[in-house]
Length: 277
Image 1 (cartoon, rainbow, N blue to C red):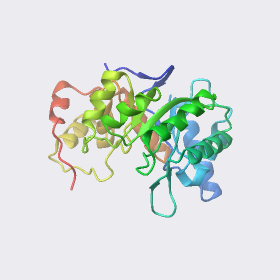
Image 2: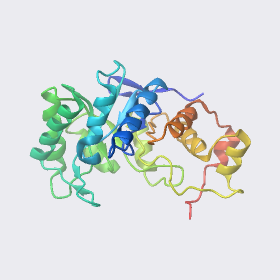
Image 3: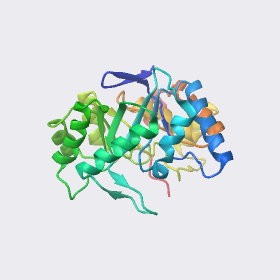
Image 4: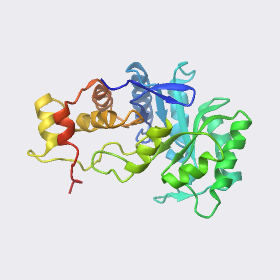
């Protein structure tokens, strides 16, 4: 039986969280539907929600507050700063004064006095890492953020950052079909740092009838998405997947994966799954 909770510093959350990126707010109907999805996530036991200052130019954070504030006492909200999103580009921006500004804006939009988890969205190659993590450490010392995390980092960068401030989480691309962050995952497991895989399910992972993930899904009467999420939870006790959706039915399907048990044979069959075409 896989563990059902994971630590984020002194906070404990259920190991299947919710990524809010895909929630829609352009129309009143979309906003109401997205708010309902957030509330349903809480009903289903979600205690960790992931967002960022750059998601929909801050409107994603505003939606979370609109739907859930005042927050349940066990809910942990993680947000990020350090990457702006003008148009179709994602641009790292890690100047200390910018990170402070974005933290203040996130506090306002989320309607909190202290952010549970504040992650550096990307390391800005034009700014020393010590300055970027140092800015978050100062915010932590001031009581404006509780815990610090990183996103898209290497083992070496994580080691450098931990010399400046305690790091409780990393958020890197990782899923059944893309395991390039395997060394970092193993490093996090050794140190007791939560590993939050973004894109936990490969969007194009439409496996054929003869592939292992499809065979397992068909035998268990579930979706391949559920198999992929269950595999992540079995892969490491450090894993904290955050599947996101704007649809209630997909949310309920994703959350059901937390209760799936894959056999030893299933896990062996999934050891070497090729990247989808």
